Length: 186
Image (cartoon, rainbow, N blue to C red; front, side):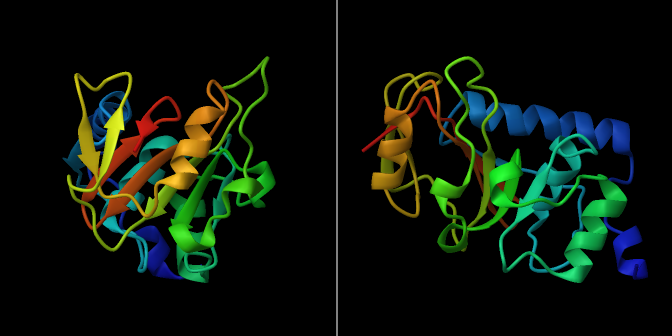
């Protein structure tokens, strides 16, 4: 393990993790709202926002899948040291990290009718993240909200599975936005 794996975690873990957790939950409760986060310095190519999500939501009981662009020794070592999350195949993952192009939605668990919560949350690293683009409606949105999404059809198919389906966190630099499965996209 290289020493880079030892750096980049929360400096004041209890305080920073609590703030980060609140912001992550806020993005899922208010789909399309973009939050700025800080406190993590993961190895490239993982963004600050994705690092914050990993430090906040992953632990030894949360299996994580890495897309090919993030499946690098420095990233694996950093995740193991700071979270202890086991690295697994897409089919076993509760969380996944990668770009839109490399995360095949059909590979991830969408829950079961008895346990819809046994589905994956995908952390999608984006080149841009803005409040323009696709129109969002549903719980947590008063009328409509907009968010730059990589496409629309996949999210429409995902919402049609509700209460099953995947949840999404979009990250770019130090920004994060959420899209739960209950959100309707057009």
